[in-house]
Image 1 (spheres, rainbow, N blue to C red):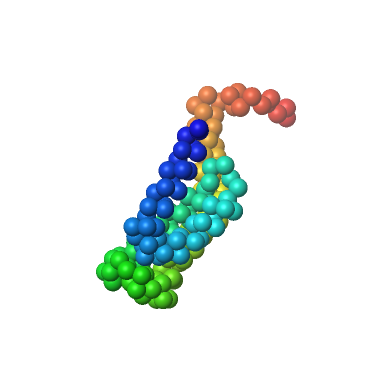
Image 2 (tube, rainbow, N blue to C red):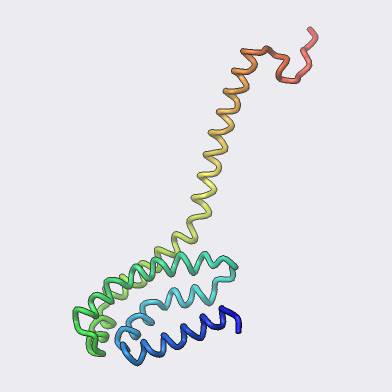
Length: 148
């Protein structure tokens, strides 16, 4: 049996145990982590960037609803209180939406940063070339002198 299969089996066993022991927590967690589940299904990249980005921010957004559940009592009634609060939904799904924005916006931000670095490096190289020409003369350019 491969290690990923063992990990999947272990995950299923832990999930089933958690459902039996803490059903209200599982209800809130599955409802709140739905964007991450969708990202896991739709992410085709082998490195799973979408899943990582949405998952981490969605998990961070689950702190407030889970804390509210623990405060209300780890009961089905407490889970209902959390799940019927629209602000908790806004918090859970809003953080997941931030994950989508980060995922979609990062290529543009990276492109701008790389272009800025290239412009800065080009300017530094031009300054260095000027300094070399001043120190060693036009011969270092490799260009033939103009006949005039």
